[in-house]
Amino acid sequence: MPQINVTIDGKNYRMACAEGEEAHLTALAGGLDARVTEIRRAFGEIGDMRLHVMAALMQADELQEAQGRLAALERETAALRAIVDGADATRAAEEAHLAEGLRRCADRIERLAHTISAG
Image 1: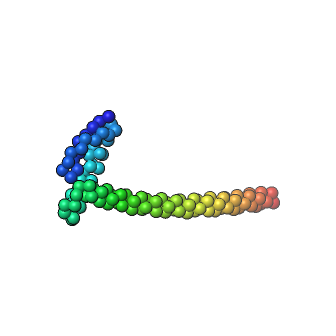
Image 2: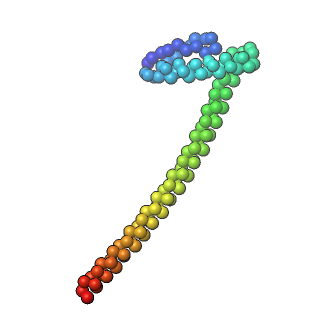
Image 3: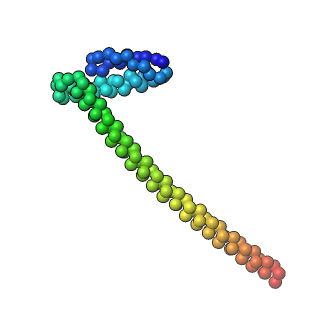
């Protein structure tokens, strides 16, 4: 299992990750480090633990908002799929009705042609 070193708030941490996930974990750590730096600038020295908890809570809040938006988009997608499915069913019924009308017209034309040729 690969291990990488990440730096968060000036402290180095050795982290294990799945094969091929090194860059992803490094990017996540970089994002957390940036958030901690941002909070430190805004609030000053408030203690490492409190600073890290605030950063984690802010990221958890963003995640929750993103999950809410995703759920709303999934509901909207489902509603749009239902509309499309309904439109497809309507179109299929209209095509069947049109095909039946054309079949009846063709039958009538055939009968008329037969009547004309017989007479």
